[in-house]
Length: 394
Image 1 (cartoon, one colour):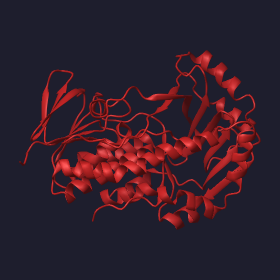
Image 2 (image 1 turned 90 degrees about the horizontal axis):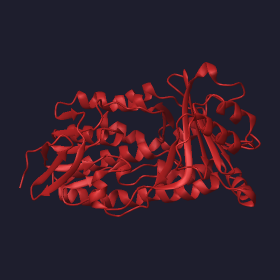
Image 3 (image 1 turned 90 degrees about the vertical axis):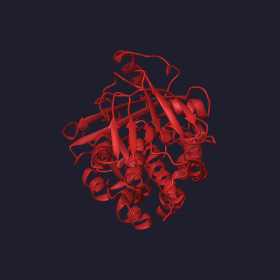
Image 4 (image 1 turned 120 degrees about the vertical axis):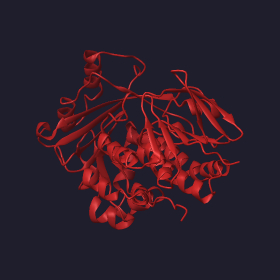
């Protein structure tokens, strides 16, 4: 039976807004329920692979994305101990030539605003901040969600885009808390003028070391510089203050190359993030309820594909719903089948690659040799399953 109620999306992040926009562009009514007082992102930089561009093309947002992005000269891996270049792949013409689109970096706030502005310009999309969803009930012809302030909101279907600790996932999968892997991350953005000498500012850089790594790249028309420092620690569950964090970083990076140490001196170490993921699952849907992005398949940052997978999810889900003629149950099951192996590979291959990035002793020597022996064509072949992207329904 047809239901005229809107589609409800829990979460106004990148995945939720992408799904809302893709559905809204089909003329479907959508309500995005976001718990924070304002629909706006906070955060740092994001790396986007070539696979995300066909999604933005479907939404008509490629020009907007490129306007706000930076195309690094190359993606480069460095040995964190010696500073030697392990491997690199030029962005243009190599990556763009093989996959049709470049590798870009962008501030999360800018990416979120692109999607948010497009949603605001779509009449069928309602954006509702300060709406914290606490639960939901499925009905034969729809779904009703309950909110923290006691409201009941009816919808024709429900999409959980509510992140790592999703309430939708808790109902559908019923698993426990995300599993910390024993690593933490510090993130900082500094003015480009403060970047120390000797740092390559025009690349997307990854420094790999025994139990630690660092990522850095430029942002916002080369006026800002994004730095992420990640390391293994037994204290990952502790909430240390700035002095505690600083001392731990100094101990961890004692053997790191001077360029890395110079960048660490520029970082704000008052806050750190515990790194966690979940084991892949096959089933994300129940009747008229499904989930996407980190709610369905949270992965480590190894491939820098968290945002890309959520955006692919949103566009793919809308395309499958249109193909199914609005049959939510059928479309959501097809969505599961279309996405589970690809997203599980990002999770599982990402874990294996994480081991290589942080290997120690002879194991590290083997990984470095293996990375170093790769030609540009080898690297492109290794990335083709990911960067070739997905085939959307016509």
